[in-house]
Image 1 (tube, rainbow, N blue to C red):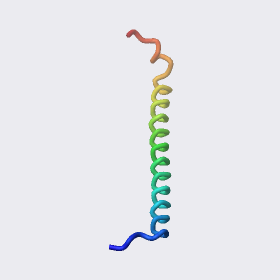
Image 2: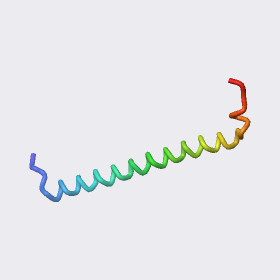
Image 3: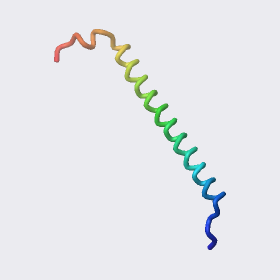
Image 4: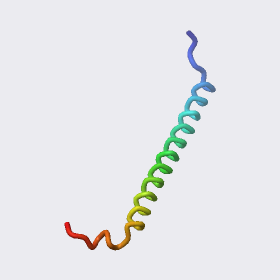
Amino acid sequence: MSQPNAADLQAAEALKRVRRRRSLALAGALALFAITFYVLTIVKMGPALFDRAL
């Protein structure tokens, strides 16, 4: 088994950075999607939501 050379290590690191950036972008998009649904649900229920008996 041969040792990986510097070019292989650099390519692996670059691939790792790209994957991490993509994962963070997907996490941000999912969080934005969830927050949007939460806000739209509250808006659709209207102010009567806060004027109810507990």
